[in-house]
Length: 193
Image 1 (cartoon, rainbow, N blue to C red):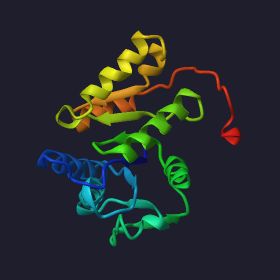
Image 2: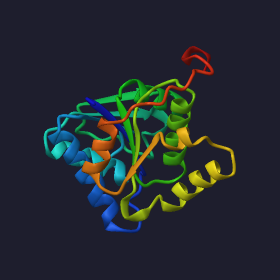
Image 3: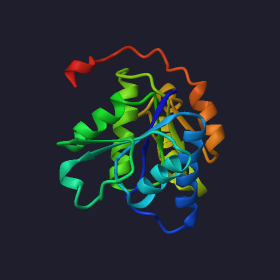
Image 4: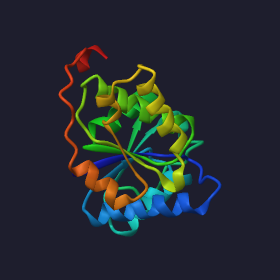
């Protein structure tokens, strides 16, 4: 993996551990010569993960819709800042630029980005590893809900197993390095999306 997209909140959350782990993730990616691709802002966990990578001279590409520039203030020290028109274009660009995805704590936007990426994987539109860094059990309830989807017949176990989870950065990166996408037939082509 040469490039990892990180989806996360534009807020810091209620506990310092979220900011600390976001910064550490950025540092870890840079030390491993993995370029960070993220939402382009300097606020919240988004800013923390970028600052962590930049503190270790890592390469950081931000992708920011122009209409968010006034709310999610663009980070000024990035290797590259790509300005796009729409949120969908942002996700598409972030997907195009990465070899894998890590999800940190966040709100609706983070979940929307995560679910679109895992849905694309389920449909066979990409074979990239998708990991949740489950900081301080933040995603425990979501993980339970995903298992309920399996138990109640709305999600196949093979698709549940596509989701890589750890509370430890190194362990999550190792799971991502060893990931092999299931042989899922493409229901639709990327051009049809």
